[in-house]
Amino acid sequence: MPRLMAWYAGAVGALGMLPFLAVRLTDAGFSDSAATALLVLLPLGTLFGGPAWSWWVDHTGRARSTLTAALALSALAVAALIPDNPAIMVGAMALFAIARAPIFPLADALTVRHLGARYGIVRAVGSIAYIGVVLSSGALREWWEPWPVALAVALLVAAALITPSLPGPPQTRPPSRAQWLELVASPAVRLLLVVAFLNGLSLTTYDHLFTLHMERSGVSAWVSGCAVAWGVTIEVMVMFAGPRLLRRFGATSLLVFATASGIPRFAITALAIDQPLIVAAAQGLHGFQFGVFWIAAIHHMARLAPPNLSRSAQSLLPATGFGLATLCSLGTSAVWLSVGSTRALFAALLIPAALATAAAALLKRTR
Image (tube, rainbow, N blue to C red; front, side, top):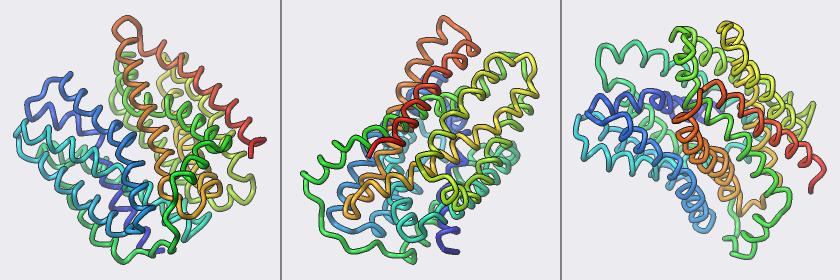
């Protein structure tokens, strides 16, 4: 378990560079629109690269070596973002999008199988590292602009070095195409992916546009920063409590609780913007919405998938919830914000939040 904790601290901590990635690209000479276009490569990689890599691992059984290679390639790609060379940075973003795609599906499948309900504890350590990286990067970037990406390189290399010592996956027979089709044809799996997509629409819109919403509403940047940090703090607490929550309520009930928490959260975020401290406090529900959802979804998918398709099944969650959902949310938001306000956009998130809650409630009755 300590090695898994250290691994998640490195791999999740490295993601602390993402809030600064667009700024790093503009520092190197990209326009705002060009930087945004490059960021779209990340959900594209998650959508297509994650399932492809994971399917290959399920066929070959080379989980740890593939995970090590993915981390090493990710570190190489991020390192290429340090020099101010736009041509190299375009290639680096494409490589990073593909290389990082299988990292968490492979690790989550291994960890859930090895630790069961204690998965949330090691994942929480990663969230703590993420907070530390974000806070330190915000300060140290003033000293050296590429600091966030340089720190991410060090953390990715550390995770790659730890990977060979992680517990090995169980030996399983390579899956057949028929088994894969049976998995994705399962009503329970399809409905879980619908929940992940609808919930992801609101989560990814928040990830990319919450600080813009606060700024456009005249709220100080420090309030936005505190709101984000508060949400991740609640996420850490939720994940540490994951084993008890799963035993007490079960995965499908937790999915209902998580998706339902988005309804008051986005109502407050949109409608109470003239009371920024209340809006900031409401972002604690982000930690609940994401933390509870992720723990419950990972465990429920692990129950639904056969062992020889565990990695492929886990890759479907980020592919739909953070790949396809991000593409849809960014595309829709870009169109809407050309004519409307961020307040109306966040109010509209009540629709996917309500639909996700209804789908999660239906999932409880689906086998």
